[in-house]
Image (cartoon, rainbow, N blue to C red):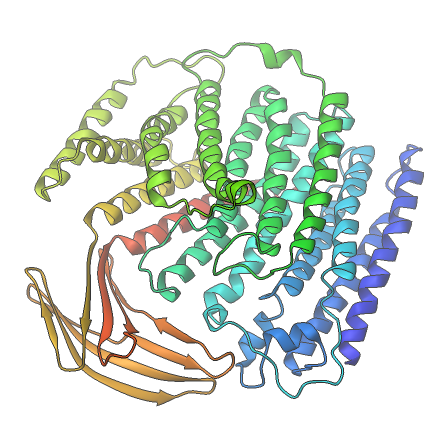
Length: 624
C-alpha cells in the first residue's frame, strides 16, 4: 500500500509543479534574456515525479498489492512476471498514467534540445504543453486515479484479459503512445509558432524531426497491433477495420500528410495553413482516439473502460483545446504572400498537394466509417457495424491515381518541373500493367479493377527501384519509405486476391479433403501450465507434394476464467499456413479454420522499411 501512496502523492506534487512552470514562463516571456534554467529544472522535477508515480504503480503490480483497485482488477498472483509489469499500462488508469509520463518526458526533451530557437517560441510551447499536462493530471487524480484503495485488501485479483497477455501487445501501447503523445508537441509548437508568426524554414527543420519521431513510433505501434491481431485473435488477417484499429490509423494519415507539407515548407516557405490545420487535426485525432477507447463507446476487444463520465471529461477537455487552437489560427495566422503563388502543373509541390487531398479523402472515409455508427446509435438507437466492404468500395478506386501521383512526384523538380526526357515513366507504366495482367491471367483472375490496381502499385514499385540506382544515396530515406509503401500495397493486394480458406468441423482421427488440401486431425493432448490449461491439437496438412504439421491450441485460463484460441502459423517468404480450432458446443467435434495467406511476411517487412526510412531521415538532422 505504501507504494500506491507514494505514487498518488507524486501525482499531486507533479500537478503542483505546473504553477511555478507557468510563473517562470510568464516572467521570462516579458524580458529578452535567455530562457531561465528554472523552467527546465521544474520541468525535470515534474518528469521525475511522474516517473516515481509510474514506478509506484509498477511495484504495486509486482508485489500483487490487491489493496490497489487497479492491481486488483488487472492482475493475479499466478500471472507471469512480464505480464504483471505490462499489466501496468494494460488498463484504463495505467495507460493514461503512461500518457502523462510521455507528455512530461517530451516537453523536457523539447526544452533541452531546442536551445538555439527563439526564446518566446520555446516558452509559449511550454505553456501550451502544460495546459495539456494539467488536463491529464486532473483527469487522473479526479476521474481515473490508478491508486484508489480497497479495504479490506482482497487476497486475490481478478486477473488480466488473457488475450492481452501477449508480448506484442505488451509493448504495443508504449510504442503507440510515443506516437500519439508526440503529436502533442507538434500541436503546442505550431500554436506557439503561429502566435509569433514564426512558421518558417528554421521552424520547419526543427518540427520536422518531432513529426518524424511521432510518425515512426505510430507506424511501429500500428504494426505491432496488427501482428498481435493476426496471430492472437485467430481471425487470420492483419487488418479488420476494427474501430480501434481505425483510431490509430486516422492520426497516421494526418501525420503522413503533415510530413510532406513540412518538406514543402522547407523548400518554399509555403503551405503554412495546411501545416497548422494538419498539426491541430493530428493531435485532435489522437485525443479522439483516447476519448473513444477510454469511454467504452467503441465496442472492441481493445477497449478498457466502460465509464461514459470519463469519456465526457476527455471530450470536454478536447473541446477546450480545439477552441484554443481555432482561436489562435483565426486571430494570429497571417497567410504568407508566397502561399498564393501558383505551382507549375508538373512540379513536386503540385504532386504533394494532390496527394494531400487524396490522403484527406482517405482520412474522411475512415472517420465516417468509425464515427457514423456511434451517432446513429445515439440518434435512433439503431446499432450497425461498418465493415471492410464499405472501406474497400470507397478507398480502392481512389488508391489508383494516388499511387500514380506518388510515383510521379519524386521524378519532378521543385517549383517548375518538366517531363522532358522522362520517357521511362511511360515505359514503366506500360510494363507495370503488363506484369499485372499476366499475373492475374496466370492465376485465372482477370478482374479489371485488380489489374489496374496491381499495375499502379507495380508502377510505384518500379520507379522507386530505379531511384535507388539512379539517385544512389540522394533522398535515400524518402525512396526507402516509398519503396516500402509500394511493397506494402502489393503484398496486401496479393494477400487479399490469392488467399484461400477452409472452415470445417472435425473430431480426432477424421480427415477433410478437397482439390487443393487434405487436413487430418491426428491427436489432441492436454498440458498444465502456470496459469492456464492447454488443449493442443495435432494436424497434418497436405498440399500437392508438401506436408506440414500444425499445432493450434485452446487455452483455459484460471483467472479470469476464459477460453482462448491460439493459432499455429508456419511462415515462409511466400506464404503463411494458418490454423485455429474452437469447440463446438455440446459436440465432440472441433471447428477448424485453415487459411493459406500469401505474402504475409512482406506486409510486416514493408512497414519496417517505411519506418526505417523515417529513422534515416531523422538522423540526418539530430537537432530536435
